[in-house]
Picture 1 (tube, one colour):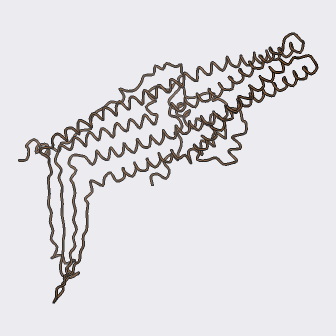
Picture 2 (tube, rainbow, N blue to C red):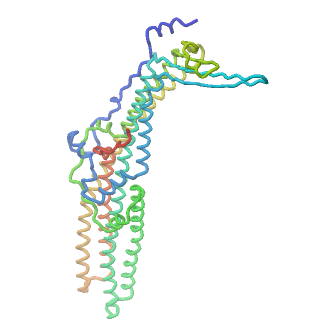
Length: 466
């Protein structure tokens, strides 16, 4: 017997409601641990758009464009977005009646005679969407497309930042090579000078050996930075999908590190972290899971199917088109599981628990975004303060070497003091060059952690929606 409660539910058109959830409850406050200025949301958006152009480096701009055009990971993300759009496009197919056609012909042969027969038919079926499953599936497909688009945006954010970081690593290593080679030139002069003094009977063998040792130790540091240059070139080659010979030659030529931007998006309200593409993707994943809860709940209700068929037959082909010979059948069926061993209930509970998991994933992504921004701000601040001290140290070391050379030529100090001054200057210059590269990398990481890079890229989905 059909359950009365279920009958009342059918008559009243009941269905599972989309569960309520509050994403705003997971938003972090604006009490940043790092010191920031205050800017408007509009200024923040402007600072995020094409942030790498702030470094005023045409080669970097070219590398970023090549990455956006050719990177294989980005193309994969674009294909995933295209697949999601395809699923969205056909999400309503389940609500459209399905129709199939059949036709057959046969011949029967006996010893004395033969006969032919023909038949054809059309059949259709349609599941009535009384509980809103079709609308729920459409919402889920829409949210999946939005999540896929945000994933595509985050791929752009990550790849732009990685390209800029590899370029910064390349230029930083080249700057260290420049410093080392300049010091090698100075130390070679010292070595030649002390050898000349030895031949003149002024210096000793010990001073010659000390000068040679210092020179070779400095030369020994060259391969490490040369290897860093090669690794950065290899990474850029992969990111951009291949570098032309001309571009490779340009990159291998020494160019100073890009200039640091005069300003950037500091002081952004913490709530804007919700607009970071990976966080937005998690938000849309919550919406998808909420619709899964709806569809799982609707499994408690019966399904209604409307089926029909139209058939015809005869001994001649012309009989197939004789309307009088067609047989029409129309039927309605109801399907309801009276006992399923708790399968539907278990699925409902499982989908509700997965909704809670997706909410936690969203919160974790938001907290992780906050952590990355805080760390990037802290790193940038510390490197900037360190740069001031390193610049003073480099100035002092340079002055000390000049004084040591004068005093040595006057015979007031030994040559070992000059070598110590040279080593001190080399260390100070190397640390200064390395820290400048670190500052540049910190800027890049800060832009990445804020989710900058995809804004303003009008070609994000060009050609994918056709």
